[in-house]
View (cartoon, one colour):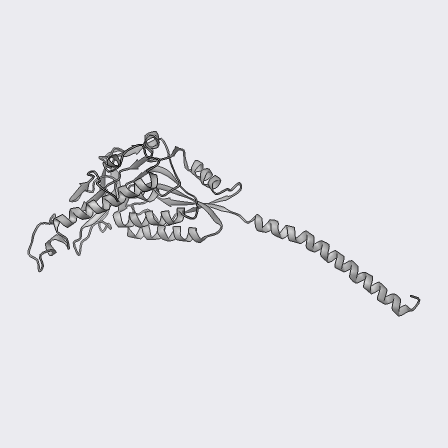
Length: 308
């Protein structure tokens, strides 16, 4: 080792060895740190506001929002904050299906503010749990069929069914029956093991407030939005999480509820061009909405027979 060249080689080898050891130590320290950063990525509970009358446009926005939340891996649970009297039957059904798909993959809880009635309750029933306040109103499982201004009466037409806007009177009532059965059937399917009332009682379209809603099984617990958020987070196994709020559809101000909180309250048209009135082609429109619109309608709440 007296050779200067050999000494320089030995020193270099020692230096490389020290550097390699340092690199290994740094790597050992960095890997757990990187893992902890990945584990500490924020997880979310998303609160989705449904506080408008359910129409084609508002339901499309909400369904799209629920679809995006379903595929968002950072969102571990969803809370529906509902304060809606319901709305279009077809749109309400699309909301129900969107919530059902979401609840199959993530915990979905509902917090009812003022009311979740008719189509809004249809939207809520696939939730894992429904929270209500003492003043919340839920239920009103029924269908309203709004007829054109002439009430399906005969008139000069080019075809036998033209006077009936594409359907006979019997078909009109058959459609009401079919949609009512679907609505009642969904409530029985989603909440049948928790309901303390019969299928026939559900079909009577009663609405229940607060503690009474819990007693009948229409809701699960008395509590506010924070309780629903905490429950959804616990269901998702979250100890630390962030809450993010979504308002996919702006309130339209089309229907106003009047007549108090009883089931006889009226929903009145607040603006011309509302989505449930048609100035051009007359059409029969079916609603799942709390109350009675002040145009010609049939309220259909008779007892359901058979399956949904």
